[in-house]
Length: 286
Ligand SMILES: [Zn+2]
Image (cartoon, rainbow, N blue to C red; front, side, top):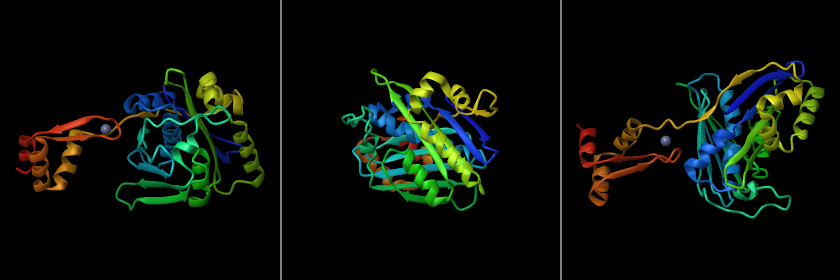
C-alpha cells in the first residue's frame, strides 16, 4: 500500500512528509512497461508530486508537472489532485542506460540536466498558478529543491529513491521532504538540512522499514502524524475523450474516419484505448 505520513517537527517550524510509493511505481511500470532507469525517473517524479499534491488547499485542486530535459528518456509529465490520485508518463519509456560508476541507475542521464521544470496548480475558477525553474542535475530531488527555493522561496530538503529488483519490479520507492514554514529560525533550518543529508539511500530505508519505520527512525518512536493513502489512478473516461473529439470539429473527425475507418484514442497516462465508430461520431453532433 502507498503511504504518505505528514507531521510537524523541530518546534513545529518544519513540515515533514515521508512517502512510500512502491505500489504506485509498480503500477506505472505495469502500465508503461518502463525500463529500470525510466521507472526510477518517473517514480521519483510521481513521489515528489504526491507530496506537492498534498499541499493543495482543496481536494478538487489539480497539479500538473512537466520536466523537459535533454536526456534520453525525453519529457516527463505527472498530474495529481488534492485526493492524491496520481498519474504520469515518460516520452521514451523503454530507454536503457548503463549504470553509473557508483552502481546506481543513471536518472540524471535519462532526464538530462539542461531544461526546465514547470509546475501548474489549478484551483477551481481562479487563474491557474504556474511556476518554473531550470534543471540542476536531472536527478529530480535537487531539481525540485531548486524549484522550491527559486520559484516559491520556500527552503525545502528533498530525498527521493526508487530501487528496482532483478525482475524489473520496484522493491522500494519513496521519499522524505522537509519544508520550512514561513519565518523558520536559521538554526532549525540547519537541523532539517542535517536530517536530509543522512538520507542517501531512501529506497533501501523504505524497503526495510516502510514509511512508519522510517519516520520513527528519524524523529523517535513517540512521533505522531497524519496518514494518507495516495494511489496511481487515471481519471480519463469515454465522456472526457468525447468532449475533446467534439472540440476538434465534425469535418476533422470525418476525415479521420475516411482514412482509418474508426477513431482510436490512447490515454497517455493509463494506456486505455477508446474506439469511436462513424455512428458514434454522428451521435456527437446530433
Ligand atoms: Zn487514462
